[in-house]
Amino acid sequence: MLNMAEGIARLSALAQSPVISTVADAFAAAGFDLAIVGGPVRDGLLGRSTHDFDFTTNARPDDILRIVTPVSTAQWDIGREFGTIGARVRGEQVEITTYRADSYDGATRKPTVEFGDTLEADLARRDFTVNAMALRVPSLTLVDPSGGVEDLIAGVLRTPIDPAVSFGDDALRMLRAARFSAQLGFEIEEKTSVAMHELRETLGIVSAERVQSELVRLLAADDPVRGLRTLVDTDLMAQFLPEIPALRLEIDEHHHHKDVYEHSLTVVRQAIELEHERHPGAAPDVSLRLAALLHDIGKPATRRLEPGGAVTFHHHDVKGARMARKRLKELKFDSATIASVTTLIELHLRFFGYAEGTWTDSAVRRYVRDAGDELERLHILTRADVTTRNKRKATRLRNAYNDIEDRITALREQEQLDAIRPEIDGNRIQEILGLGPGREVGEAYRFLLELRLDEGVLGDEEAEARLRAWWASRR
Ligand SMILES: Nc1ncnc2c1ncn2[C@@H]1O[C@H](COP(=O)(O)OP(=O)(O)OP(=O)(O)O)[C@@H](O)[C@H]1O
Image 1 (cartoon, rainbow, N blue to C red):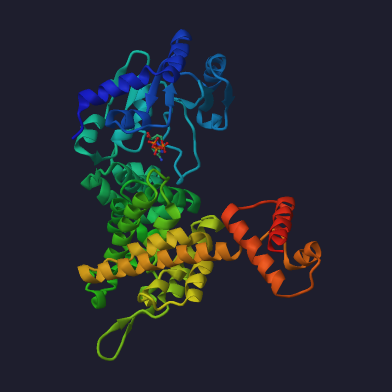
Image 2: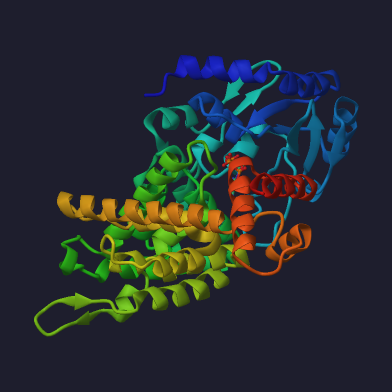
């Protein structure tokens, strides 16, 4: 439960940090209003770490630039037509934007930028009440016209205006709702989620790049499953990734799972747990999470009812990889991500043909070679793919996978050892010792190899000296 007194204290501390007070003092001295706005206010109150320094002001871009230049080491104005000036202040990046009075520059319309005069009007056009708060600096007055604090306490996402109007202005906000629910663990208020469902088709106007970027942010969040469910439940997912809702129809009788959809969400969750376990503190692995989400999308198209009632999904790995490639291309994912996700989908079944000891060394080697750079992700995905409630089966599969990882390690060590050669080869041995081919050359070679294994790299000269000494000692 959010403690507001603590939140306010944290926010005041943030506001008095050197970066913020430097900017605040400069604007106050120039006679303009300034407020921290949006993400940093929300995250500050929640006690989440914040990396954004977003400000809003009644100063126009020319004035912003003039005021911020003496207190910053760099300035840029890529967002100037939207009223935004960026600057580097005390080593941090800050963004300062003129109050806006138009609706947000959504994807649905050509952005018509209109500057405004009041902070309240600027806040009214923001996406959610928890993002529509500002803290005036240096006075430290919290401005919260739409009840953002209340919603933060309740853990609710709600639009400051009628959600249908807000989403009509900018359809991307519907995806942002799902993304924030995944990041913050918040519920989406009923009217807001009803509007998401009703306006789902307007998402078609949003560019694939923006959809992709929200999906990536959602997957990188603490609880992607919450966001994914939101997208499926509101039918928004069907607009850009219909393969996911299609999984709901597939009752996986064979495994007594609820269905492939629930299974896939469990795999996403388990993959994230393993990510944390195996790589504590690492950045969220979006490719892995995407692969976990998509790994079974080939199932609906390959489902067969066999005589006797068993359900099979032959080649759903290959089919799924092909479907994923097409879909990810449409969503304008970069080629590295597409390659990584499709490799993982293609290989996600390979392990399930393994029972301890049944793979030859060459099968293990082929597994490593085919996975290439994706091997660690494949370990995680395959382990996460075990969602059976049968404890004994789960343990057996876990042990079998441990066995594979052990064998990979052992083979690698062995192959590294095998690759070790002494500094001096057989021909040189013959030259140095004045020998023809024969048993003694082999003995000299083994002597040098032992030396190399015991003492590491010696260098040519030292190796030759040791060889001569060894030879002399034998005579
Ligand atoms: N499409 C939009 N419609 C309305 N308001 C928006 C929109 N995009 C951004 N905003 C406003 O701008 C602020 C900054 O947006 P941004 O996308 O950087 O998110 P954020 O809240 O800072 O979260 P994050 O820390 O994840 O970036 C938001 O808090 C919100 O007030």
